[in-house]
Image (cartoon, rainbow, N blue to C red):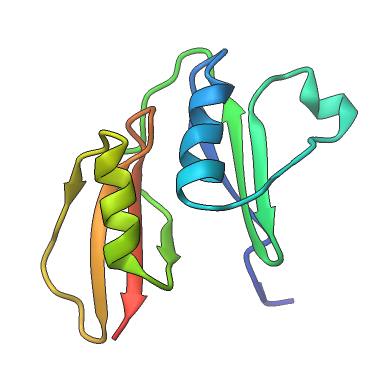
Length: 120
């Protein structure tokens, strides 16, 4: 059977920094947090979901951020999101143009690379 979709993406985070994850993924990127299943909640981390968009952050004790591998999120208003990120102290970077998209990169609070894209 062929793969048909991504069910969710999992990113790693250091222990005990869930509030920083909430600030970035819920409050800035606007992805609502959902409760983790009780059996998984004791491991720490947090889940953010809206419809088919599912971003799960799991605790990794020997954490190292993903610097090259990254999710790319489609956004509706890249300029406003960039301003909101910068207002909260996140450093936003540009990269080479990609046909049909405006895009930026930002590190989440843990140093994981995140790409934000808007269709032109």
